[in-house]
Amino acid sequence: MPENDSADRSTEGMVDYNANSLVQKQHAMGNHERIEDLAGRVMHLPGPLNLTDYGCGPGQSTIETARPALTTWLAANASRPISICFADQPGNDWDALMALVTGETGLAQGGTLPRIETPVGSFYDRMVADSSVSLATCFFASHWLSASRPYEAPNTVWFADLTGEARRKMWQAAESDWTRFLLMRAQELQSGGYLFVSTLGAIPETGEINDTAASGRGVYRALQIVTASMVDDGLLDRKRAKCFVFGLWFMTETEARRPFETNADLQDAYEIDTIAVLPVDGGGDLFAAHLDNPVEYARQYTGYTKAFAASSLRKQLFEPTLGAGKDTKWLEDEFFRRFEVLYRENTAAYALEQWHLSVVLKRK
Ligand SMILES: C[S@@+](CC[C@H](N)C(=O)[O-])C[C@H]1O[C@@H](n2cnc3c(N)ncnc32)[C@H](O)[C@@H]1O
Image (tube, rainbow, N blue to C red):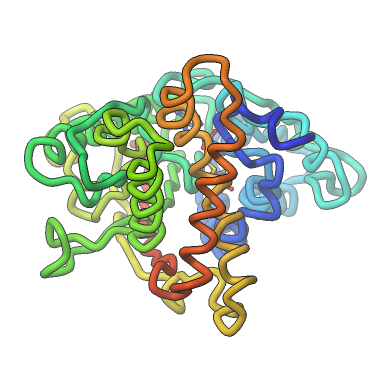
């Protein structure tokens, strides 16, 4: 499928998702043991076993998320009813996902597939039946907020560099979304089931803006530099750019814990197993192996960044600048051409840094 066809998909650029989702794939593979452990913990629960992967995306990583649970459950009892739900928004590339699920690297074991379901909707709403999930996973997805709202953000496109009232308002929205996500999952998990959320996080760092270092600061600051250069050259609408912020929030441990301290329904619903933000081995520069080859380093970063950033840029900057129905492809090409040049000339200055937030909760 040509990239243009994905213009309205929320999982933008994910036509090439497998090629540009290295971080997600590494993450799913790196969590095999933890998923096996959690799958083992829910095996004693009554009824059919179900894993639901929320914000599954269209790629191999969701399969690698489900596989350890499936293998654990089948090894314990091959005849027990098992289902896997891949849950995502309507715009997900469901055809690509089902081709992978049923293909050679998919989930068939001994020639048979478990029951596969594909709930479509938002994880800020209910997605599956009451008490039907034994193990819920959500990787690299829950940082996307329920809506992208405008904020007073003249010098940044990124939540972590917001200050004052704009930051307060955006955190209010992010905290409310996180609370809602957890409350929805509490209705869907069976008693004794587990929720495992893992995504990009942030850590305290004295001297950094807001005394917080958030994952991806190099990449988002590079996106701001390109946005500002396009505005200065008259290619992007200045007014729009002034209030555009990517609709995401990478939480610190304190932020992720906050709803559990204030919301009685959450306290009633969950026992906290883990809430932690940890650095990833090596710091998180996915393309460090290409550091001595700036052309390749820049090419890789551009592909990776385009996969998650292009759709927000298109909807909130390119389309409003050009007007409804106009072809935004040239603007997108120019944006990512400049982005690639920036990385070619500065390489590691804008490298991806990652801290991963892990949340493991047991449904009481
Ligand atoms: C970066 S992808 C991660 C996919 C997969 N979990 C992985 O680790 O590779 C983020 C996914 O979250 C999904 N997503 C974002 N907001 C969502 C929402 N409100 N409800 C359901 N899915 C959502 C997107 O559609 C996208 O497929």
